[in-house]
Structure formats: structure tokens, C-alpha cells
Length: 137
Image (cartoon, rainbow, N blue to C red):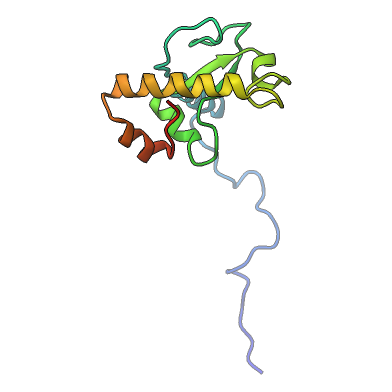
């Protein structure tokens, strides 16, 4: 029977704390920079002003809504600026876009977003359909 020395290849016991190397950058500063960058990118909005929603986050309009929110289109909406800020009731309530009876507001947002996208990016309906899968006008 042949024996192999595995003492240098596997360490079932964690290293002592004085041996573990620490990151020189403060973790709080790094997290804060990432959050600031993420908010800047994710709050880009090309939607026109309206009384039904806000294009900036406020105390009343505190919940961000990506107009095209399925898993395939959420990141595209964020990148293209098709986000709005809704009240809690308009976002998650019974009459809200994710609620039981929120189809009217949801369709309004999608039509408005498509018009804004076509004007802002100077594209055609066919290019919109290619990017978002459907025409809402």
C-alpha cells in the first residue's frame, strides 16, 4: 500500500487570524462608491413628466418601477432609461402596476415608454419590437 502525504495540500482547519491578509481599502468606502454608481446608472430616465408618476425619486414617489419588467427586459429598461418612480399604492397596491387591477396604468406606462424610446433614440417601431418583443402603440 502506498501512502501520500496530504499535509500541504488540504487544510481542514482555518488559518489563525494573524495570518489572514486584510484588504487595505476600507470596505465601507468601496460599498458606498458601488451604491452611488448603481443609483446614478439606475435612475437615468427618459420618460416625459406626468402626474401619474415621477421621473425622480421623492418621498411620495419612492418605488422605482422598470416599465418593461420581465426578466428578459428589466435590465434593458434600466439601461435605456425606461423607469419611473411610483407611490407604494400605484406600484404594489391592488390598483398598482403589479396588482390585480393594475392593467390600465401598466399599459399607459408601456405606451408612454415606447413613444419616449422612439423619440429619444430616433429608432423605428421595428427596432423597438426587436429589442422589447412587442409593440404597445
